[in-house]
Amino acid sequence: MPHFAAISVAPPDPILGLTEAFKADPNPNKINFGVGVYLDDKGRNTTLQVVKAAEQRLWEAEPSKNYLPIAGDAQYGELTRQLLTEGVSVPPGQASLQTPGGTGALRVVADFLAHNLDRPTVWMPGPTWPNHPKVFNTAGLPTKTYRYFDSAHNSLDFEGMLADLQNVPQGDVVLLHGCCHNPTGIDPTPAQWQQIAQVLKDRDLLGIVDIAYQGFGDGLHEDAVAVRTLLEAHVELLVCQSFSKNFGLYNERVGALHLFSSEGDSAHRALSQLKVIVRTNYSNPPAHGALVVRTILADDQLRQQWQQELAGMRARINGIRSQFAEALNAAGVGRDFSFLTRQRGMFSLTGLNLEQVDRLRREDGLYMVGNGRINVAGLTPSNLPIAVKAIARVLS
Image (cartoon, rainbow, N blue to C red; front, top):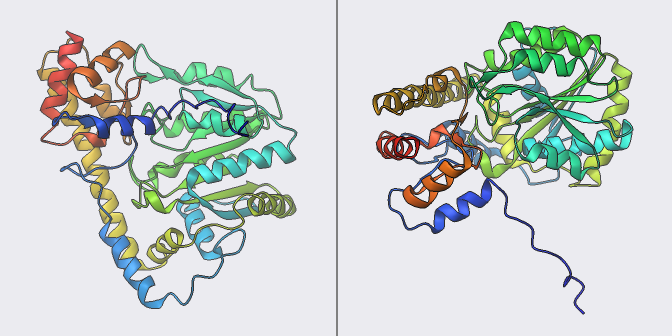
């Protein structure tokens, strides 16, 4: 009997599987709201001009394709860490690793917690990115949820969130979205982040910050307020950083893991264990995408060009949110969609239920996650009227 005959077929990924179904749909007016990829106003995902400029420099000057160290490029680690900590006093213990995307950073963290901190429970917001619990569960860590989203008002359930965090047992870990919360698009205010930081500090809880959309909300500096506030409160942190979105380097898998500890020696010991995990997993990180990021961040001219292109993407996202809300209101849908303009980043929970989502996919070729999450960057001036008409019909 074949060794693999008894293996069952795994269900498709709830988000990436949508793209496969979308590609097979013959509907000429189909729209993909599922996967989190930035699209321009013509529905294209294009390479940033600054990335092309950096790659041209690398093509001319890169001396070899030799292995990187286990922790990756040191300058890359320092430059990416500075994106989070500019203007704040950092703790004495710091360590950075270059990782294969933000997901790679999360998995390294999960294995690190499982092997070195007695398998603590990881608390995450409800809802969260569907892959979050899977990453930590696969590493053998239990996960629980704290209140986050108030679906009745499409807002942050801040009182419920604080109450739940105040009851997290000492020794457990709290996962936080740094900005542009996925899937809701709803973030705490700077004042609320201060209260969250105080709870974590008072209860001596370790924080994990997943920040995958820095610059897509209100600005590079503004979107790092969570990390800065937690560090100012002397909360020890593991920060998982992704550059898929804000550099458009989706297929290069560019990420970083930063550890902030109150003791320098503790950070040194933790880094040694993190490197063991990397060595036994992927050995050392891929180089090209990180070299692109390093080249841009280390050069004033390229960095300014990147910030301008990023500001353009941010303006398009916020602009299409306003247009979408106004068009839905004009269509007389009988529901207030003004919350779209208060959310940040690419994602929004629309309030559409599973039956409505299924109808939109079957009848109109509108593909979104079953919980009603959409990627608003999938909207363009040409397809927005199509989407609004379809949504108004299923809501009527």
